Amino acid sequence: MDARGYQQYKQQSINSMTPGELLMLLYDELVKRSTLASIALDKEDWPLFESALDRCTDIVNYLDETLDRQYPISQDLSRMYDFFTYELGRIKVGRNKKELERLRPMLSDLRDTFRIAEKSSAGQERRA
Image 1: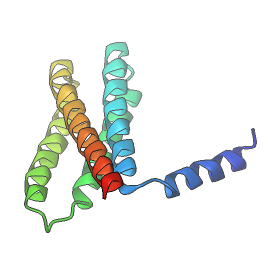
Image 2: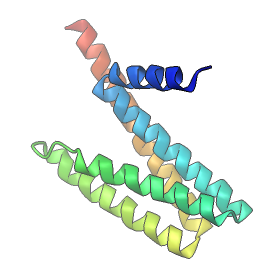
Image 3: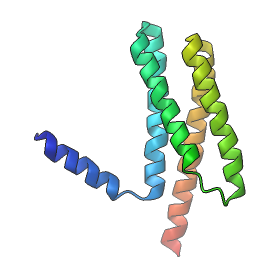
Image 4: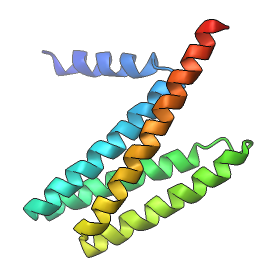
């Protein structure tokens, strides 16, 4: 397949996503990268481990930066994102498997919560 054609397809797919779908894409990538970091840590592949955690941190920072601060829950989410950023940094520096395995379910739970909210929101839009 032509690489340029694939890139155009990928860009078009992203441009046609709803904000909720884009949010889910980010959370899925966050969970995927945290899993990749865990695997890399087991294999002692330090460059892969660090790049996976750096990407996790980038995603969390982006999620925090794009919060709509007019809603009260945004303040709580921002504090949670600060916690995730802090923990990801500690895990990276300490190469701490135990802490990574403690954090990963939290990331998955948050993703799953947003997935449920997205489905609920989509269902309400269809009924309206």
